[in-house]
Length: 384
Image (cartoon, rainbow, N blue to C red; front, side, top):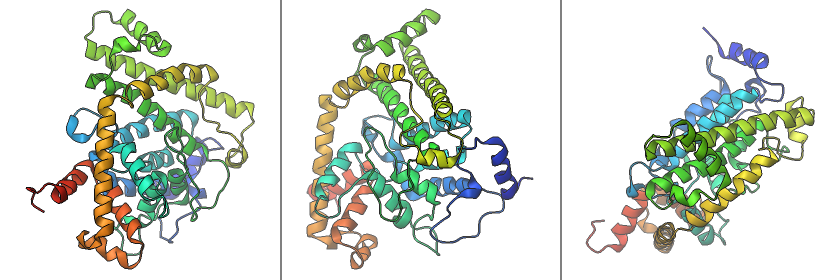
């Protein structure tokens, strides 16, 4: 039988000296007696998994709205894929896998319905009311909006997981300061791993879904050197496999190639810059978890291709515009007539600005719930 204390001691033996150790956590906002068998980051991971916001990710858009098909990624399956990739990287680098998993599973809790289109709409609507950004919203979810425990609001996660949520950074995600968390320097390595695992996941899995949907074709990717390299390797080894299997093998190898490059280059950087401790990571001015320059260059054409041909495909744009209309319509309706909010939300108006209450409510909706609410108000034949 392993106790929490024994697991914490084992971390010092197994993990790298620059990894975040469970026993060295800065703790929680509200003091709690820790569990006899589960370290702090394992408890945080479990709290995220059992949260309402996590379950709702099943019906929130990644690229394709939920009703467009059962086989496309949702925000939930994307989150699970990020966690899987991040844990693989963390294990190879001897980082704290439970902290990585907790951050990865929580990193999109603040996402709106309808993906980045929904976020863009709320950003515009909240511009004069405190703003909106999904990392900050994710922290708001785990700090205040989840209602599970009788002794404190939110999930009372550790400082490190909360920092991982607010400092999440990718080309799509630009973190901003959040007053309850003081700046402790550069993100620790576990945060950096989740950030880059998120990039690997959405680049390659959006590509997979784009091809599956018919919006992209393998033929159109032949000019992309990275795709061509992997595609030819798969064709050489498996010349007679079906197209669907070939596509899956290409995507799998693309991910493996990028993860392998990332691990090797990060290990090289840690040695080059003589990173010996967690404190060294905090003081280092740049990201240490990164691809080699060669892989960075290989990835750029693929990212540009996705931006041009998938994210700006006319069908995706049409859905984005529809999503903005749904969000705008609901926001205007609720802010002008707050009495139409459900009682659970209306009760919050006594303590907060109505715009923030409405924003929280809409941001927490799933795609289908938002569509259903919109139809109830604007379809004359729909029962309210």
